[in-house]
Amino acid sequence: MTTRRAAPNYKALDAFITAKAEIDTMLERLKALSDDHFETHPEEIHWGHVGTLKHYAGLLRQITDSAFKEGEHAA
Figure 1: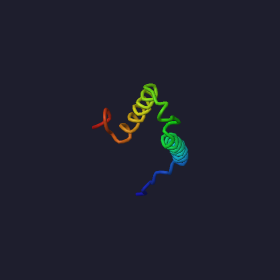
Figure 2: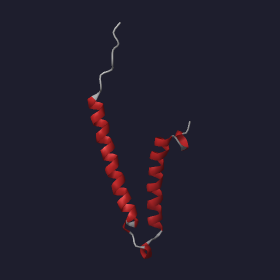
Figure 3: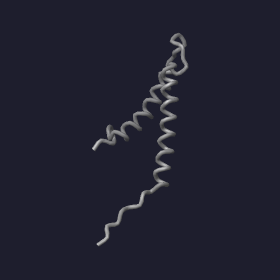
Figure 4: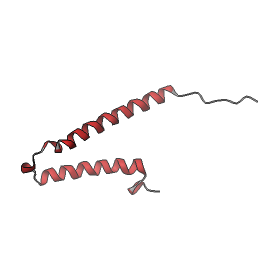
């Protein structure tokens, strides 16, 4: 009897690495923007800025909940 080994799927691996690189780039950009206080000055902050950041946080929460199986994605 011959044991058949699954062939590596190089196209899937390439696509995975490409998607990961895209995510890494987005995370680096978001971190830099956050470090710069989202390009705002403390004396210029208004409720619109708060709403924008809460919107960003909600979108990121969807991602982290999915990735870590939390929130609505919890088992």
